[in-house]
Length: 140
Image 1 (tube, rainbow, N blue to C red):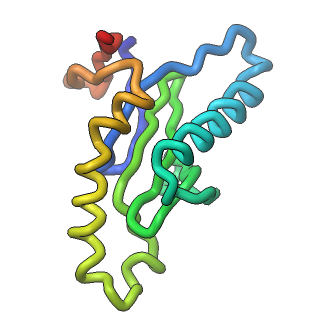
Image 2 (image 1 turned 90 degrees about the horizontal axis):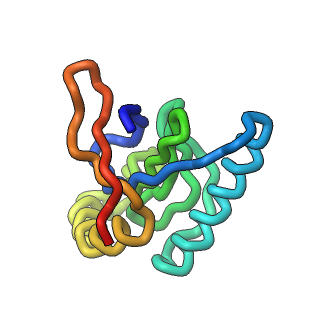
């Protein structure tokens, strides 16, 4: 795997692959992936609720809670499942915004290893000078 996939800056990321045998099935498989991710994230992190939005042009938000956006980004079959501190206007305009970011970072650090184990089949070993990522299958 030598592709790179977008994800929000500062996110906890888990990598997997979306395997589509027939190009005509891509939209179906992508929709199935999104629903599967929502179900698994909702079971693992009950504070997340469904949310449909975007962070930029390539990173799709599937769920969120008071602190974080949970989402997915796909490029050429490589999937980044991510969770990151929210950065929308409603989040920063809240009365308790100064206390929010440290709480968000604490929550994210507490779930990081569980998140990666639940959603990641690959680890990113690094990036080459042309930006291509180098990935390896996660060892169980």
